[in-house]
Image (cartoon, rainbow, N blue to C red; front, side, top):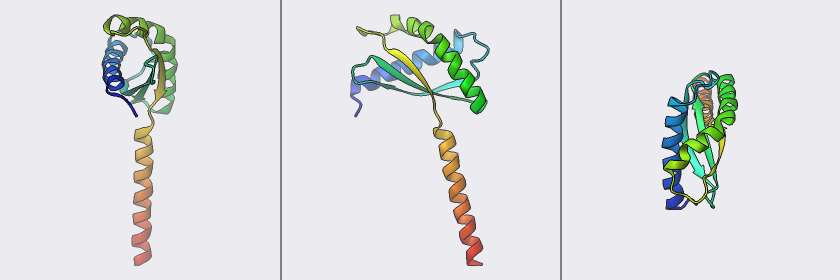
Length: 120
């Protein structure tokens, strides 16, 4: 269960990281990244940052590598904006929620199609 403080800090980090990725990271492997959500560890020392990439799985993997290369830069860039004793370690993850939802939608359509075929 996330505390209110964890949620507030996660929202702040999400906004800061999104701006930094968009405006300051010049890595050509970055791709078109959207930070979807951030979760904080209980002690606020680790930020788990989830993102999507419009280019597909391969582009998302390249973006993940680019973000991992730039994570110290991003961490130093957000540090002055956070009022925390410790600046959290950043860990990036590809958010596959959209792909998962699409797969479920396809399965539901297939079930519905099979039911209409059987009833005929």
